[in-house]
Amino acid sequence: MARDRGIVNFMTPPQLPDVVEPARLTAALRRGGVLDAGAVREVKVLHQRDTVVSHIVRLGLRYVGESGGAPQTLILKTPHADFAKTLAHGGRHEVAFYAKLAPNMPPGLVPRCFDGQFDEENVSWHLLLEDLTDSHDVAAQWPLPPSREQALAIVTTLASWHAAWWDHPSLGDTVGSWMSADDTSRLMETFAGHYDRFADLLGDRLSEERRILYRRFIEQSDRLLERYHSHRHLSIAHGDAHTWNFLLPRADIADTVRIFDFDQWRINVPTHDLAYMMATQWYPERRQTLERLLLNRYHETLISHGVSGYTRGALDQDYRRSVLWHITKPVWQWSINLPPLIWWNNLERIFAAVDDLGCEELL
Image (tube, rainbow, N blue to C red; front, side, top):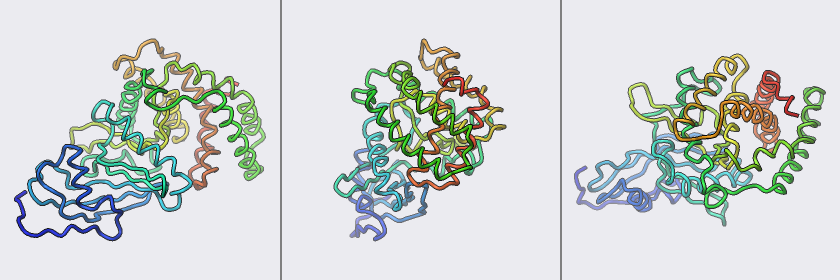
């Protein structure tokens, strides 16, 4: 871009937070190594939308001076106004992900982050992310599942992500934290309280058979948690790995699949993500069609990335156990006031998977 030697007015549109003031954007892009001598001259909103828990703004940038290679657009992610306080920890968690984990991961798995901050005093946060709108898109509009080839690409990327942190020596030290037995017991006590209210709300819409399974699950939770407390064959789980949190390259673009939305990451049994993707989100026919194929691809990818000592049979056992654990998901979702459109359908799908896979035997 030719250098503009005139006077430049640096203005922040009134609807945007201070983080997108041109001077601050200039500094962030220079730290990211994508802007050298030039500077951001103007910022404008190209598009904005709400997700369930966040607000997404696509920003257009104009520069003064040399700006070859600098991004013409960025994504600004901020809290959804309705959930800014109740889900503030998720924002804190996602900012920490981009600050601590993303720089230590293989390239091409997640969008680049140019700036991220969590304001403890005002309980607010923001992320400035690489904009992949022109090169990538989700596999299908929610709630449609992906095609076979799209699902294979997504699971391959998920396995690559898990392999990068598989039994990593930093787990629980500089990356994430372990939950103690006392921590998980308190968590289950909280869940049990939520479940009681959830069951009361549903009345006869929650069958006695499902109530019995929930009660047995709560009673057996300490034993089920032994898998986690073994601290073996664990990784960083995404925590919200439905297929709409993956961006696939468009048909004419040679690039990698990217994963996004990291407000629920933590150390966990990796099949937690697979179970949430397939058993919680897909209706039985689609899940049954792709489940074995995708588990095979997942395991093959782990092995190709150097994971050892984790057999295909161990993956099956972990997957069934994770499917059982996901009967908790609709209850947690209800407890944070997500709409029934989300948690009711998840409830029906996860119990179909529990029945299909004989997960009650694990109790």
